[in-house]
Amino acid sequence: MPEYNRASAADVKRGGVNETETSGKAVPPLLVEHVTKRFRQGTQVIEALSDVSLTVQRGEFVAIMGASGSGKSTLLHAMAGLTDIDSGSIAVDGQDLARLNDARLTRFRRERIGLVFQAYNLLPLLSAEDNIQLPVMDHRRGGDKVASLLDRLGLTDRRTHKPDALSGGEQQRVAIARALVTDPAILLVDEPTGNLDSVAGAEICGLLRSLCDEQNRTIVMVTHEPSVALAADRVRILKDGAIVDGFQTAGFADAQGLANAYQDALRKAADCARDAS
Ligand SMILES: Nc1ncnc2c1ncn2[C@@H]1O[C@H](COP(=O)(O)OP(=O)(O)O)[C@@H](O)[C@H]1O
Ligand SMILES: [Mg+2]
Image (cartoon, rainbow, N blue to C red; front, top):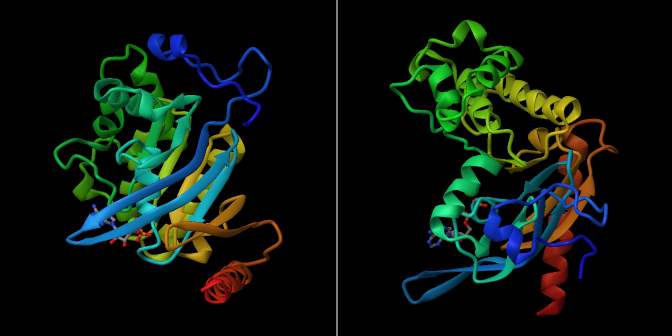
């Protein structure tokens, strides 16, 4: 068993879980333990996640890399409580997601989890500012947060624009601001640069990196692009639903170095699988 305290049943009922527990050990923002997820496709059963474990500490930026179909989105959706899992557990900010009923899970997700998708998912009829404000509509001090996020993300002069009047990079910055406005325990980001050109993509990577460095944000990002993963502190590699390897990014001078390490890891995993069969 890990040493950190889990939220007690009473804590869960009260909906209150703290970052620092009485033992003084920090609860990690994300604790994924032995998660398995299967999908039925006709008569076939696909194991999209296979005994996946991952702990992310506060202020860490972790990239999950894997080919298309390796289970990246399924893992991210499970971490957000958007997908039920078949076994294992996922705790965000000390809260076991499986112990929340639908209404509490929805509230918990809105308040404690920031989600950013490849396709931005902004509301087309709302301005940038109103899109960012949406999750904190009923909070009195929400407006101050929105103004400081607009400023921090360089969107102040775009605040009245609707999404279709913004560039892809600007729309993604609005989506990131919206995800941050509740001050979530963790930011979950799915292929954030997938719809962007390389310049705008690099800008988004730089922004995520600086949010981590300057504000101690905790970020889990899935991507298949080495140049994007380079922004993270460390990389975990998914192959056929299982985490097969990982490395720190600090040793790589550029994306090519990381790409080589990623390919090596995939080759090694394929060799192991062949030897085992
Ligand atoms: N809702 C679903 N129903 C059936 N199979 C699914 C569903 N979602 C994902 N899968 C399958 O699970 C595997 C992992 O998919 P996904 O997590 O989307 O991969 P990635 O994001 O890495 O491309 C794939 O084989 C995919 O076909
Ligand atoms: Mg995906």
